[in-house]
Image (tube, rainbow, N blue to C red):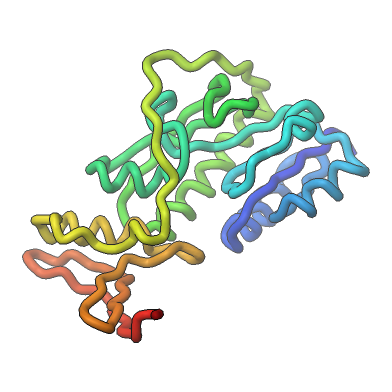
Length: 227
């Protein structure tokens, strides 16, 4: 059977990519998408690595101490430690970034680095997340085949704050169509609060944005605002 590996991730695309890639690799590969599922897997298995491609919960020290835990952060750490990295990058005007494989420790995104690979920030958030998921598996394959040792981060940390749903309102201070386009696309993914504007008693919600020449097109949903 060989070594045991666990992949913990949310998102249907991550499960599909797990199925496609894990069967090509040696060892026993297990998948989970919630903390409860992860705890159940760890009761009966001693994984060599636990990979967290896209996870929403704090990983307890009991798990960090059980196996070598690896997360994949969408910034060139120590720049961009913290929450909502994709949205924080795009709203700051970044066009590309790197996907970083980190050894997880108690501090948020403070662990040493195994590998980094370039990642384009073109397209909607959903498209970028799928691209990052595929790139994650390139990192996973290299890591288990070459057994890289992580090296400490260097440089001055720059922290990102996790965005709140109310921050999805398109700021009236944006001055260009490209800025509005970026704001809509960076929030256009399943389970994310879409970009919106409130006009009187109505809420306009936007997705599927396209910037073509001097025109911005998007799908708009109009609803009555919640009281």
